Length: 124
Image (cartoon, rainbow, N blue to C red):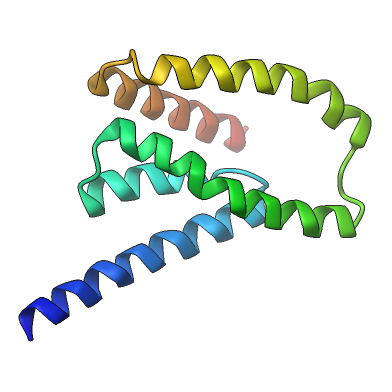
């Protein structure tokens, strides 16, 4: 019985993390990673590098779903999108390459600093 309960709790954590991540991604247009990464590290005990990489793969289907709704409501600025995609692709490639070279302690600090800066920027 105890094993069944721990399995249920583990799956409820997965579902809660997914739900909150999906809601943030759909509502804000991004931000799912700022929830998914700390949740996976703190609640599931996932190693930093795997949490960051897993967050990207979690966010991809969420983003595809969100894009469907944004397109259907004409909320996308296509000329701006095309201009930003080239830099985004290059940045994504470089960031993914750097992830494997970055120590977990530095990655945690950089991610924390990014979250603080984003929060401060949102408040201004």
